[in-house]
Length: 546
Image (cartoon, rainbow, N blue to C red; front, side, top):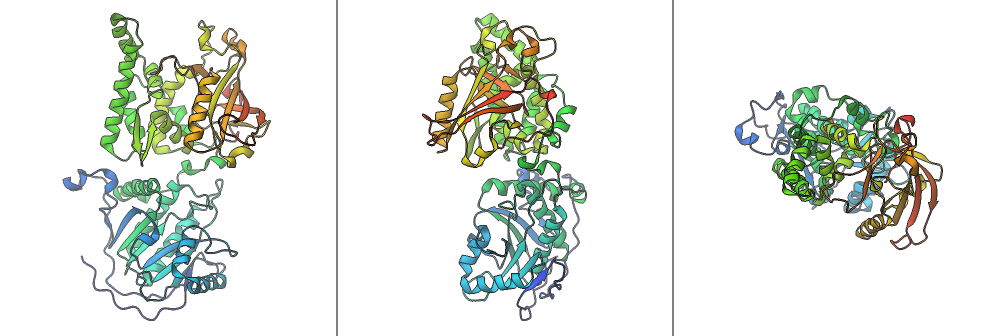
């Protein structure tokens, strides 16, 4: 039913506060009809065909939650017409000096900022404080300043942020606001994982909407389109499935890399339950399903996967010595799932993801690095297939082809290293890499990669040398058990690639820091690969860069 006209609000008090130890609840400042009861859809069976025809991530922006519409849009908070905005503020020394708070303070001027800071200092224990904005030519009439707790991986204050967000939305509603902008609060210096904040914002809006008297639309806004898309994905799922929303709990996969290890990752739990797929058709479906949380366009996924398979099939012909052998090679490839998975890893085909071109290998490592459980459910099957050719079995034979083992015991990797991560790589540091680690037995190939990536990203160049026992080609007791030569590559022997399995362990044995780290004078880091990952502790820290 349409909402009744909203009554004119009474005179505004100086501030609205709540969520703290001693703050009084805000007075109700709005009128209007009571919200209708929300009837969740348990599945998509009763969704109109016209809605089903749209990509699933559109459902959030087409869906009314109570009498309020929930949207997510890319852009600045100042680019949107709204009469209220939720603003995460800093510490007492600078409430409005950074991020969205700084932008809003600059827009509203010094007089309002002084008044807002005085209100926050007057209510030091409150999690949110509402500050009216003087009328005039500004559409914005109300700001809700929220104090966001710092994310703690081992004791995440999920409930605190959830209640703070709900309180902020209620405060905006009690001020007779109709359109409320909410940024992705906490994802900056407070280090909250973006997926978790996305879920908290959606759950908060759905729960608070039951009592809305004035608010007609809640809009999650961020300048980063990729983050907005994540909100839409999470919101679509939570709005569409009542069971997912009712049983919502903060997911474990949101723990950031700096607080995560193999032992507490979702990856290891799922990997231990997975097995190599029995045939290439199931592998293909796993690739599609793994990509769905990362690429929002279903048709784009289908086209990309078809391209990957066509490329890998055609290259199996190209690398065969004769037409007869070519047919045999393709048959063997299609029956050998691990070999086909290895070809997919080496594919150079790219897909557009939020304006950036990415290869499948990059997307695989991104999902492992972020411990994205929705992607990992299907990715671990692909990883199992690839690992079958990375991990050396107990009954392995001596390496027959000298190309398939570094005779000097050295592998190389080139890239770039942001200055923020230099401190992690101290001599003696032992860690694991949350992803596959590609390397080459050729220092020239690694140097070529290093020069390209460091120049493209305008970042300090780094050349990694990875030591393994050179006697491992003949003596299994000396062989590194989690790395192998990539025999089934779409590039042939062009990259001379050796691939380490995800979460491989390394120790920093030498670090030479360049004062001018361009590709001619790069940082040089020497690592020693663990002989066997199974012999290393599962709680080793994870590399922030690799």
